Length: 548
Image (cartoon, rainbow, N blue to C red; front, side):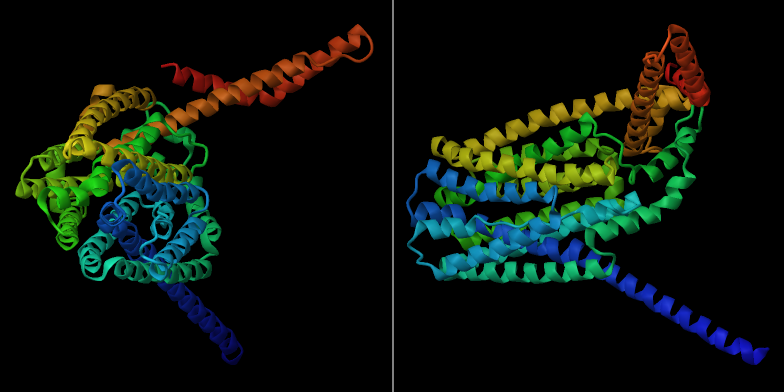
């Protein structure tokens, strides 16, 4: 018996070794994939897309002697290309990234090989861009882990920005346009190589986006099957389990519609970029004309500002002490409003006609801008399902780049009227939008309290006290309220559909005599009643609960 069992045991041991090896391979693939998406690709994206801001406006005005309106239009053309890639990313993130990176590399090559005296090749070559997708982070089941990944991803972008600013200014000052074109070509080529590596690794890890979606949904099956929506949303349920169950099932749901708060957050990305858009479009020219600073110093100053912003955002959002300090100032999502107030104050300080004060204002602006962008990205990911985030995430970037197009055109025009006017306009509009955003958060919160109270049996005051004390996150309450609202809409649609089916049974055309018509209608009514009686009873019970 022992000799007969030996081959089986050997085969079983071999299968275990194979499974362990496959598991280790999948873990390695996943780690490489996340490193590419969270660190390398965002870093190269930040470097490639910020590099032109150091020299583009200065080169157009100093080298080609263009007017403010023409300069603004060319800068808007550059930003418009970023809008196109962001819009394409809403449907085809990998395609958008590949095309944008390839065209970006070709653009820098065009600038490098063509005559430096020609304007068209310079504009066409520089007005290329690339985007990266955040959907891998949104796919994460653990919302806290997903938030951290999004924060780390944004920090990688800003590190790339620091690298481009600190190196690009000196490269342009000492090597001219050919130097920055070659520098940009190297960065874009590396980005393209790592993108191809990511595509290969993702395919091995589950067939790319579609395969990952299948793996993700398969992993979520056990969670979804263990969560009964009726139990999550039943009346008099305990609040904490309801929040936990709704959050665990929220991310994979495909039928939860977007709320007006989701759309406002997408537009807020554009407003948040208003000040940084003006600063990047006219900042180098402002420093050159007002204070006589060369591109090397301008690049270092922007790099210091970007580095300060990255350190501030990481220290505040990625450490326990930083989180604790931020919560003492304002809890999510009102911390977004606090950071946007800092943006408005920073840009108004930058308008003061003193170089040290201007530098202080720009540093404050970049610190609070990075903090606001990080908090917005985190909050936006926590209140959207994966399918909704696939739309809202890139849409926020489309709005952001569209606002950048506006600042690109209006920035030089306002600069021509008064050099400090762009800063004054940006600061004033940011503070006004912050007031509106604060009121929107309060309004949504008050409406969510009533929805949750109806379904859990708690009073709105009790729920409000728990949210304000930090026992319940604002985003968790938003998820539960959105889930309840979606269930109500589904319930009303189901009730309406059943009414239509019942009326169709009553109005079914007769065949033959009137008696046969009556008999047919009666049998139809009996059939529909017997078929739907249990469902109708359930709907009546739900209606009684919803009417509380």
